[in-house]
Length: 366
Ligand SMILES: Cc1cc2nc3c(=O)[nH]c(=O)nc-3n(C[C@H](O)[C@H](O)[C@H](O)COP(=O)(O)OP(=O)(O)OC[C@H]3O[C@@H](n4cnc5c(N)ncnc54)[C@H](O)[C@@H]3O)c2cc1C
Image 1 (tube, rainbow, N blue to C red):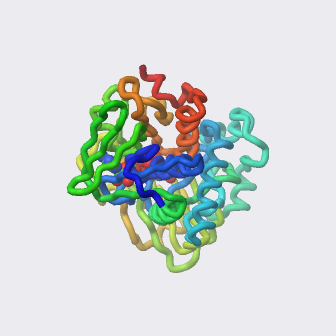
Image 2: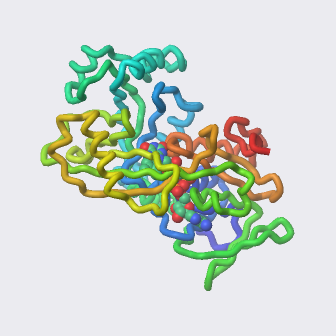
């Protein structure tokens, strides 16, 4: 039970980055508090379904440190489920049908080119892929990626908070606050309530980092995306999720449902889902899984942004001018894959003095 209002670390935000940071720090025996100015489900991590997919982009490139990232997020999810009994994810792999000949050439090269471990990825030529997965429309073969997670965002956030609170996390939510640094100590004054302090603050506030005066030197920008969840009268004959034109997330826990998502709007006025967005997602479904597209009922539309930098890698590390202020941000479209490992890297740099890889470090922008 935490009684003191002084913590080893204050974490701002409770998306995948903040929850991962709390998990890592509590495991190291450190006390921490998450302050979320809104609801924990307010950020991008609360997408109805997300994939932790190690083979992304039109070339099915193996993502950065794929094996380590995958091990860390799988382990976190496993512990969350074991502790709470929640069902928030499935390791059901992902299929990547090649819808054009050019994409097929790139996909076929992926297993060798990106040096995948053998059991992770298999290329199937057209005839075999169609025999195995007859529900895809015209395709030129496809990839089967053995390890990919389909994650229910809202379930995960709630279950992770329950799990972390059992480990000693304090959560302060829906609270405006001000903060200042005095003699090396960060003091947070929560509106009309307590104050908390710490020598270290980790900012994981997602899109709020773009407007923060502290992080102006980082080239962060937001890309809006939308999801639509479709309900089907019959259970779908799928086993895997799908990634082709955007993603189509499926789990056997909800066999009558598919969530289709894509992030693509570089200029936008608000974060509301739109009729155009829905049409776009419906047409992605139609082009990938034509047999399913006529039988759908839309049950949910959702929109938010992913925050990214030009090299599309996360940003992890300490502020160059404010000692004790750290960031985990720019998780882009791979937050579920990389967020937990990014938190481990940051903790290693703070507490074990192991330098963060330049590929994800704040230092690459200095
Ligand atoms: C449509 C769409 C689909 C996506 N699909 C996938 C996918 O399939 N796989 C994948 O890996 N990624 C996907 N992403 C990206 C993924 O959602 C993000 O990479 C990830 O959720 C970012 O996590 P985060 O913890 O950095 O931020 P967030 O999840 O946005 O969390 C930020 C938290 O900070 C809080 N906050 C805001 N302001 C403040 C403040 N001033 N002080 C304190 N707290 C604050 C918010 O309330 C929120 O809880 C998708 C994104 C979108 C938009």
